[in-house]
Length: 364
Image (cartoon, rainbow, N blue to C red; front, side):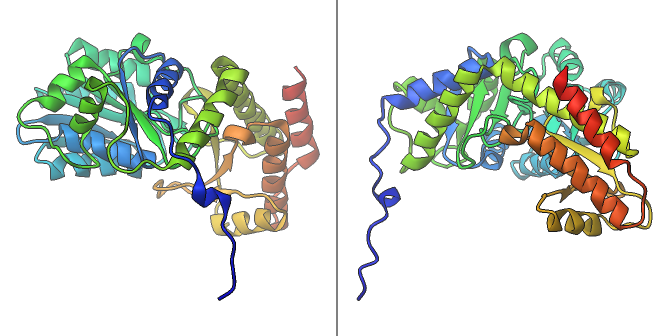
């Protein structure tokens, strides 16, 4: 049998147990959180499901804001655990309106938990987080915020905003690995999770992770994947070297330059800047033109554009400027490729003006 050799990636040393607490504290610094930080050895969808599974039980009442498939899944997970859930669903591809949240809270009576996504990578929108949190705080409601696509791209301060459970993954604006995630959990949230026989002995059990916190934050349950934790360390090194404020500013510049380029091209962005994510810009596709055709035309130029997810009947294409893509080169290639794809399909687009507008945005 041929000797295929041994890849050094298969022989990585175990991650030192004393460094898990250091990682958690570094993530707490990024989140501006003095609450407990727990680490989940899976992509952030698993951390979100763990939050739902750990909160849900008969008698729990939740208002679940749905602006993408992720919000819809969260409501399903809560219902699976026996919770009573009202889904507040936004118009397809659009953020929720704060007035709609206020009306729903006034109409439904007692609510224990309110859940929402902050920034949506699915459609490039930004929900009015601070206003919604203020409504929840005034009513004593525990809040769950999916910040996977906003941390590093927008201001996000757990303590200042008063967030009870914040879920993040490092794979987007922070430029880290996709196989790990983390949650910030407040004392109020722990009280709700741990009452009435919290789920135990499960990858979805936050109660098990509370035991990890209480027992010194050393070895995690299960068999940790060392590569993921070493990769997360390197990503956090880079975040701390650049500075979180600078990373947020870099994403804000990429978003504003993209919008300027699209405007000059003659293709308006999907939502106003105040309602848009800094990580992804969505743009409507002209009538009678299939999004897949635009995406394929851009792909032939070596640029990856993507279809928006869960936004029907809205027909949107996403321009990604997340993480390392939040740069002049990527913003320019995204908009130029989109303009070229439009022109190939017979639609007008001033590519030179778009390039000039992007250059001007980055030259200020």
